[in-house]
Length: 206
Image (cartoon, rainbow, N blue to C red; front, side):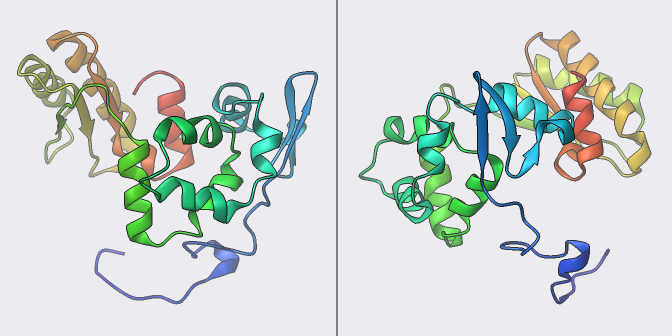
């Protein structure tokens, strides 16, 4: 779609924003300190992202406790300014992806923004730059990324006109930014759009 439009939800094909009947139900099973089931999916069916989440993305010490908590209560705690962030982090880090979706589905947009403002605390405020060009020229992207890093941008992102060029853009951005100043965070916009391109990040390219 390259124009604004309104479409009806098409559940069978996944065109639904929230609360699809096909969404997995929140669940977790832990055996000997390892996740054996995540949101109804057994470990034998895990893909790369499932394995990563199960190993590194969930605080297993409190996972079963938090999974049993009322999602409405958790949603209220997230957007309540009287509940400290330090009280919430041990809970949010113990949720499975489906539990997070269930919690967020109880919020409206303003409540989501309030929760985001509280939870996404930054140790050091910083600036992000977008590095791109019309022809998706990786040499120009690398050069611009190096200059952006040298000028003080701590985070850089590239967007893509032609989807199949994404790996070149991502690597050019990574190389260029690190030449300009080591330690700059980088990402390619396709990571946000498709699970396939998320692999770029898992491989360490972005």
